[in-house]
Amino acid sequence: MDYPSLTIDSIHAGLRDKAFSATELAAEAIRFAQASNQEIGAFLHFTPESALAAAAATDARLAAGEELLPLDGVPVAIKDVIMTEGVRTTCASKILENFVPPYTATAVRRLEAAGAMMLGKANCDEFAMGSSNENSAFYPVQNPAAPGRAPGGSSGGSAAAVAAGMAPIALGSDTGGSIRQPASFCGVVGVLPTYGRVSRYGLAAFASSLDHIGPFSKNVKDSARVMELISGRDPKDSTSAGAPVDDYVAALDGQVKGLKIGIPKEYFAEGLDPEVGARIQQAIQALEKLGCEPVEISMPHTEYAIATYYLICTAEASANLARYDGVRYTRRSEKGGDLRAMYRDSRHEGFGKEVTRRIILGTYVLSSGYYDAYYRKAQKVRRLITQDFEKAFETVDAIVTPVSPTPPFKLGELTADPLAMYLSDIYTVTASLAGICGVSVPCGVTQTEGLPVGLQILAKHFDEARMLKLADAYERTGRA
Image 1 (cartoon, rainbow, N blue to C red):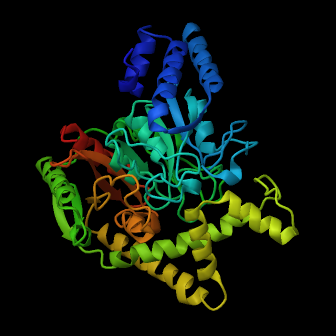
Image 2: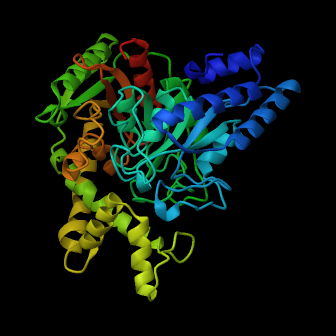
Image 3: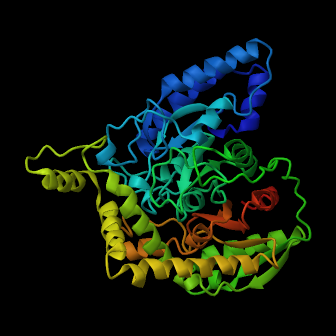
């Protein structure tokens, strides 16, 4: 069994052909992931009992002559901001280092119902705040595709787990690029669903109007399969949409001739690394050879995206993280003092620098005298950015851009410059603000150092089928 190379198809083929049992596969997955984790740090903790129990259920179904469930025998990694009943969920933060949730997120429930085996909880930036996975309170994640480089964030552990072959599937969360950027940096596929397409029930809230749950995988087809399973209305999440869920796998027919792809000039301006730009242009040419029609478009409010995003997300973070006060289920400071001191010391000891920075910024922009000047104005600009996309989708079927302006940067390279770190999200926060769907698909490596580059494909609200069709067609060219 070549475990690191397995996909959903090859796992199911092996189970049907009796090349291995689900229990044998689970045992090898646990062994390989735990051994690899010593170097990569993609997991914060493992759940071997859960994986082996799911594997036993799969073997029992096969022995009874039943058909395989969609994810029978498939190991998955779950980002540690997504709740799992009875399994420690820390959000990579000291303030929740011993928290065990009493319920499981809807997205995880749907994977488990499809037969998936949870291997463990994936490392991430603390409370999903970061672009390099260096903000984890426990240890940073190494990039398997570019040693010494950041795996991206905040879902760096999920992306690295898939890239290293530790798990063929992983769930992450994306607030401003936290699935797409790590997917790009690690050379895997990562999907941002339309806001409301996947239930957020059980996702620790960072910025509630921006948070999404989505999958990582080695190929587009596997992400399409997971998307079918986790999408759809959930009464436990008032923001989840009732829009019909398409057959995403059936849409992957390679037929993209005649599709118009928008090329926004603002995404190819100053600041884009020349080698990244070259790979993206090659990808556009490959799509053109498949029969797509590139159309230059303008997204004039793109220049305000970073400022808008970091005002809105920090304001929402300030409100959401107020619940972590040392009183209920979080770590409490052992220092003495009155109630005010207990709040202060618990939060000071529990939150890292980046989380603290964002709480302070968000509290400031929501404070009296500044709300209208910052938060309200940012919401108005958010609407203008959304209108840019709405106007573009009147004339094009999808939009193609880089994921990141640079290849994976070195670990520690940007930690002393938060603004430079924030600017690495310039091409991803726009889709987040508009609530549309997007995917990062590998499109080769840089010529000088062989660093992964991701192609971002964006589509209008609830048009994941067309987006995945285009990503799959590009993947079939073999240029990744």
